[in-house]
Amino acid sequence: MNRVHRPYVAGLALAILFASMQTAAAQQKDAPRLKVTCERVDAIYRVGDTATFNIEALDDVEFTWAASKDGIGTVNKGIGKLSKGTPLGIGVKLKEPGFLQMRVTAGKQQYIAAAAFDPTKIEPTAKMPADFDAFWNAGKQELAKIALDAKLEHVAKQSDDRVDCYKISLANIEGKRVHGWFSVPKGKGPFPAVLTVPGAGVYGIGPDKGHAYLGALSLNIIIHDIPVDESKDFYAKQSAGALKDYRDIGMDDKNKSYYRAVILGCVRCIDFLFTRDDFNKKELAVTGGSQGGALTLITSGLDPRVTLAAPNVAAMCDHSGMAFDRVSGWPHWLMRAKNKDKVLETSAYFDAVNFARKFKGKSVHGVGFIDTVCAPTTVYAAFNVHPEPKVMINSPLMGHGTDPRWTKAREQFFKDNMTLKPPTK
Image (cartoon, rainbow, N blue to C red; front, side):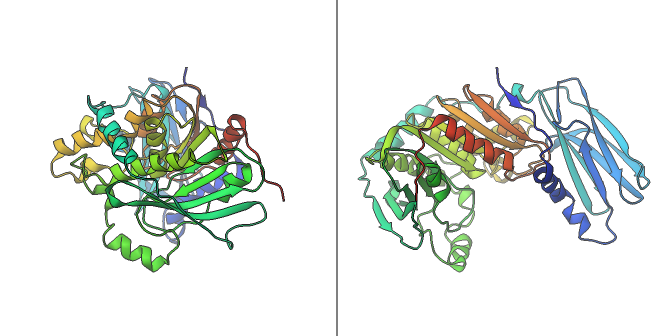
């Protein structure tokens, strides 16, 4: 049975997350001020139940409200008027497993809350292509013919008395290279390893020493064939130039997709780790958020050497949702597709759901109920096809972000499932 962690009120952390929903209104003196919350702290219901959303006005205000299936269509809607300090409850039902999003509009401001209905019963719309395995096996065979050509440069200013940090690059397909940082705990190995994959965008990174301090080899990367430590202006120019809208490159051709090299680059990182005498060759985790959450699901499903997966608010899940009157995962290719049939066909080869189906290890996931970038319906579509044991950290008040509870759960997950050897001074 799928296990769902019912969240507790996490004090300041969740208060900060909730406050973020109200920030825009607070910035204007005369803006309506509302609080919109689900009556249940965990915001989880069964299909057929009524979810009640409480609306409280801090000023006299008129508003409209609309309930949708995670931002798609309209389940119910209405108008209302509130006096200061007089709350109103609005009850709405959902007839199938999914997420009910409540959006309240007052003036120019919008407020969002959400409720989950049997989320562990959400089924993905993504279909597995008949040649999915053949396509990716061919890619891995192409990669295997390319020498690793690992280049490491020790960086003293990033290293300390517990961890040695190296800039690293590895040869990839298409004449590209993978760039990142490799952090090695000082002390006697062999160590487990953590590969950290990045969120979307074009930017530089520093070394991920946190996982090295835990006692693991730590490899964190960017997905572009550019240096990791240039100026902000450099990355801005790349983002506006050759890497502009990189997410859409080849979205209608599986052989030309930008993500083909990205994904095989993640496999190349694992190839590198397995050349290391200081890696224990047994415990390998992949983790990341958003685009990194997608790459976590994809890499762990594509490469059986991965034993642990920790994705947060995973992107690239259930690309096909919009073809079935459901929400799709980021980057929402069907919204921009000129040839929707071709994009729909191609997207299946890069759908994190299809990779998640193949994973054989343990996992801990994170989801935000009011995430409008990586919608919770799509995150659960991937979670539900993952094998046990698995845990979902639900964050009912969170949009697209990272709940401190998930970060804490991930650390404990690594401690419980890895032979960590923390470095000593």
